[in-house]
Length: 469
Image (cartoon, rainbow, N blue to C red; front, side, top):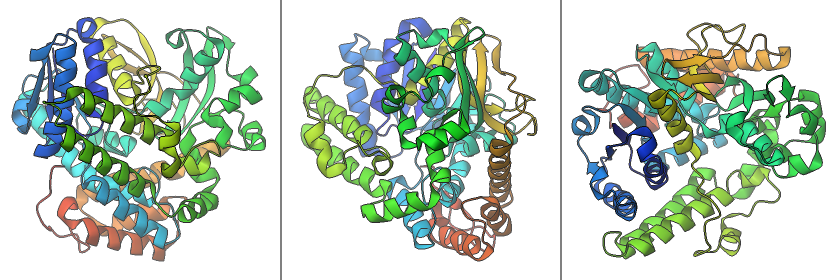
C-alpha cells in the first residue's frame, strides 16, 4: 500500500514515525513525502528517512517535489500544506486584530483568510489525485479542516475526510482518568470542526463522562480547566478548547494583544530556530542531533499552545526552562497522524473504529443539511465511514452551529464563484464579525494581501496564478 503526505513540513517526522510503527498492520509498502520547498523537503524528509533507517525500512520512504509521482497509485493521501507559510498566518492574525476581532487561523476572519488561500490549492491536488488514483482516500490536515473538507465534498470528492485530533480529546481524557483503553469507549461528538461538544463518553449504556465532568481533578488535567466552572456546569458537556474563542471572545482578543505576539509570530520564531538548528546539524550527516532538535521543537510548541488561556502554561521565553532538550520522551504523541492512521487501519483491516471525523452529516445531526460537513462520531470499517446518529442538538449549541455553518457555506461558495460579495456575506454571518463595514474591510485587506495565492482580486477577477503551497 502506498501512503502519501502532501506537505513535508514540521508535521512530517511525527507522521512518518507513526506510520512506520504501524507499517505491518496497515500493509505499508511506500511512504511518499512531497513538498515544493526544496530545503524543507531535504531537512524534514531527511529526518523521516533516518527514522525509516532506524526501523529497518530504508527503502520505504520516498522524497519528491513532483505531485504526479507522489499521487500516482496512492491508496491514501494526507494533505498538510500551508499556503503562504507562517508569514501568511501572521498577516491574517494582524489584519483581524487591527479590526478588533480574532485572527486565529481556523476561527472567524483568520479562518476565512486561510480558507481563501488553502482551498484552491487543495482542490488542485484533489483533481490530480482523481486522475491518477481515483479510488484513493484523501485526508485533510490543512486548516481550516472542516471548511476544506466541505469544499472537497462540494466539488464531488466523495472520499475526502477532515481530520482533527481535537475532536476526540474527551474520549482520550476519560480513558486516561479511568485508566482504560480509549478504543473501548464510544463518544457522542457533535458540531463543526473547532466548534464541537461531547455529550457522552461511555461503554454500552454507561456514561463515564457525566460523573467526572465537574470533578476538580479531572478538570485540572484536561483542557476543561480553560473554562469557568460555572460555564462548564451550564453547558453540561465537554467543550472543544476552540470554543474558548467564542465563549470568551473579548478576553481572547485582549489576551492576545497583551501578549505582544500572535500565535503565528510565536510559531514562526520557534520554526526559524528549528530550521537553523537543522541546517547546522544536516540530518544526513548528524541524524541524532537533527532528531533531538526536532523533538525539542515539538515539545516547545506543544507546551505553549493556547498559553494565554492556560494559567499553568509557559510562554516562549519560559518554555526552554520547562522543556529540556535531551529529556527522554514519555510517549509518542501521534496527534493528527494517529487520528488519520486509525482511520486508514480500520478501512484497510476492517477492524471497527469509533472516532469523530469531519464528514457529510447524512442525517446524523438534526437541523443540518445532509451535505453539510460536520464534526461527528463515526463508525469506520472496511465498508467505509458512517456518521452515527446524534439527533437534536441543545438549542444554544444549535444556534451557534447554524450561524457558523452558514458562514462556511458562504465561504466555500465565495471561493467557487470568486465572489467578493459572498466572502463579505460569509463574514457577516460569522458571530465573531457580524458588522458589514468590518466584514467588507477584512475581505478587501485579505484579498489585497493574498492575491497571489487566492487567484482573484477584490473585483472578483483573475489575479496572479495560484501557488500550490
